[in-house]
Length: 68
Image (cartoon, rainbow, N blue to C red; front, side, top):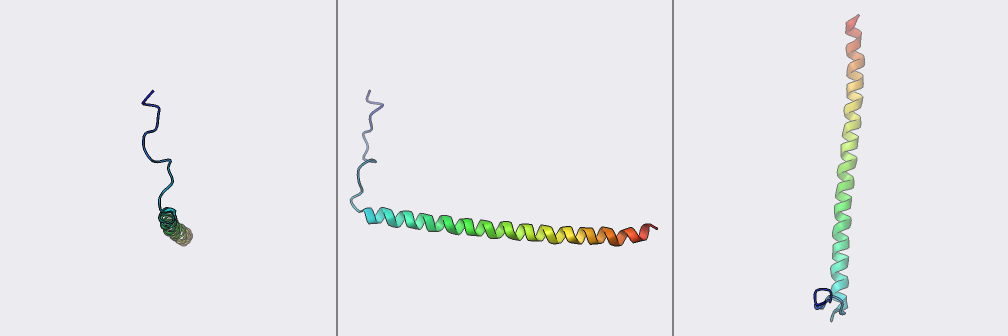
């Protein structure tokens, strides 16, 4: 039965709750920054893919004139 009981202090209140709140807000800020960077990278990748697709279509249309 000793394996099933919790002997640590994880469920007790922190002596300084403001410290935990500051750590959580810092973690949330870092997560928001990471999400923002990923969103910018994804948007850039999609924009570059669209430009590449347009160039490919225009090149195919231009080169098709030489087949006749």
